[in-house]
Amino acid sequence: MIDEQAQSIKKRRRLSLKWKWALGTGTGVFVIFTVVLGLLFSSFTSVLLRQERRRTDDAVKVVSQRLNHERTDLTSDDVEPVLRPRENPYQPHDPSKPDENHNLYNDEIIRTLASDNLAVSVYDRSGAEIFASRVDPEPFKAVNKRQLKLNKMAGGHVVYVERAPIYTRDGTRLVGYVQVTNRLNAYWRTYQRTGSILIVLLLIGLLAISVFGYMLASYFLRPISDMTATITGARDDPQSSLRVPESRRNDELADLSELLNSMLDQMQRYIDQQQQFVGDVSHELRTPVAIIQGHMELLNRWGKDDPEVLNESIQASLAETKRMQSLVQEMLDLSRAEQVEIDFRNQVTDIKEVVNQVFSNFKMIHPDFTFSLDDDLRKATYVSMFRDHLEQVLIILMDNAVKYSQTRKEIHLSLSEDRRNAQVSVQDFGEGISPENIDRVFNRFYRVDKARSREKGGNGLGLSIAKRLVEGYNGKVSVESVIGHGSIFQISLHILTTAEREHLAKLQAEKPTPRAGEALAGSNLLE
Image 1 (cartoon, rainbow, N blue to C red):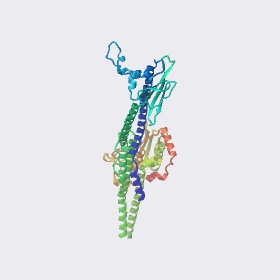
Image 2 (tube, rainbow, N blue to C red):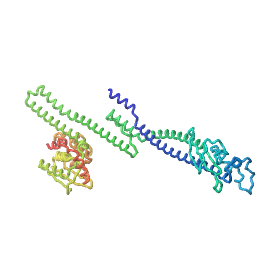
Image 3 (cartoon, rainbow, N blue to C red):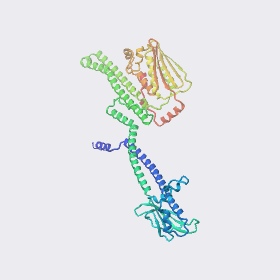
Image 4 (cartoon, rainbow, N blue to C red):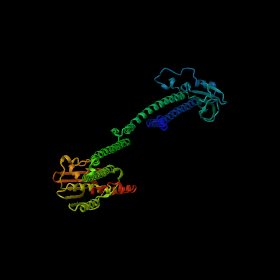
């Protein structure tokens, strides 16, 4: 009880395969999605950072070019008119002059100094500041050549700082320095905005991937739910006709569903066979038991004092006991015949040898009959069937032909083959079978003439055993008959190729050959 409760709690806490699949695929796709977005974000921000670097570098170049015409050291009076003009440089449009000389927005100095991100500072040769477009948080450092660096400020903010010396146009004299600090405000705003958008996209993507993964898992794992329901139904009711719905998917789960249905059908056949076996035995044993009981009651009342009645009752009881023994043996044989595909697989037998052996045996035990054999096989021909079972089938057919050929005692046996199958035919010239009975001769306990069959010792199980044996090895049994002219029973078995024989021999080597006691008691039919 405690184990069942523990298992129940464990089952409630478990994570279903559907959720495992959904979470697994969702996590995998999410990681890939995150990596791809991260690479895109990194590439995008790198492009933005290069643009800001180029803008900083262009600002230094513009200022240096505007101030390098001075011959003496730079002063505030020299720099102010150039970098901060008082008058409006914009003039009305004159068609005779290029637009770039008159448009305020085409002036590189104006565009550079108007940028909120750039702080432009100019220093003289001694390092004193003589011009500043904005407050520059970075201290000045004299340099011999242009330098561009990423500096981290006290608040953790990163800025671009570029410093460069200013020379005269001929490059012979140093007149001052220029320093441009790009605070990267636009870059950081875009960086944060883009990062926020990507985070939202990741969350939406995670939700979408999870939902899609769950729906996909539900679709692909639906056959497993059907299998679970089917198996549960079969557990609760072994005779349930519930089966896994046929799937049009050509995948492993479809194969598994088909295999499960096949196993359930086979289990149902075994259950039906067991029930039929019990029903048939109880029905067939009822008559001999009643006969024996009647004779015993007769003897108990008064017959034991009459020697004639006593002897008759004893003989009748012994006959019925012997018939019950034969019936039980044949029922066991039939039960084994219905399971040959499980217990006797991978067997190889030379059908030519067995047919000739049975033919010789019947010639010996029935000398009053004329037996003939047409053997069209020129060499050993192998089939997948246990030797004792093949011999049993042939004995049943031959014995049946002998029983119903009392007028014309002649039996014809033939052995032939086509490209794939070997055929054995047993022909008698006896009473024959009517068309309405020919489809039922292989049924259990069926006898065309019950009175005459009982006189000949038959229980109506021989042909049923033969049919079950042959079909258990994927063979076929057929019958043709004409009233008054006899019957022809034919069996057909697949001929093994050399490759198939080698394969079966290898499998058989791994499994011991069935013992004689496990096969059907075929010799009993000759008694």
